[in-house]
Amino acid sequence: MWTPSQRRTIAVLVLIAAGALALKLASNPRPMPDPPPDAPRSAEVPGTVDPNTADWPTLAAVPGLSVPQAKAIVAYRDDHARSHPGERAFRSVEDLDKVKGIGPATIEAIRTYLALPAQP
Image (cartoon, rainbow, N blue to C red; front, side, top):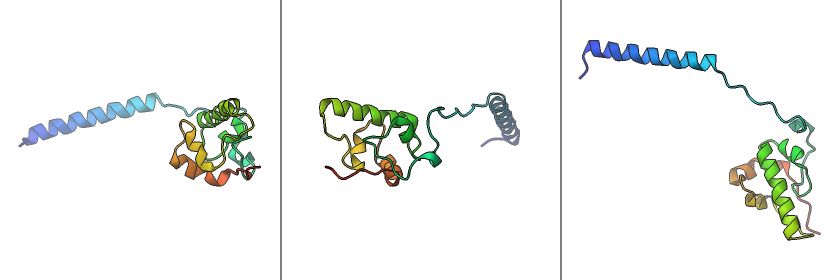
């Protein structure tokens, strides 16, 4: 077991380390980056968005989607259009899981903001 003197010494060292970390954090804050200037705010997004036609700034404004995810959706859609002319990349919201960086949790978070018209 630790003696009372050893416990006090350890407590003082822990307090000194915690104080040093707090000072380091206070002297070097990490600012939040500004959103891209050309991305609309979520309040500016129409009721629903079609991922087959929307540009990346509109997709990035959908709550739950980041700018890289929106750009990945557009890139996937463009690649799909080159390899399958005339065919839509996304027939259902679940098709978005083919895009790198989009998984089931993201799909559930954005489901209500997306609308995919019926296949012609």
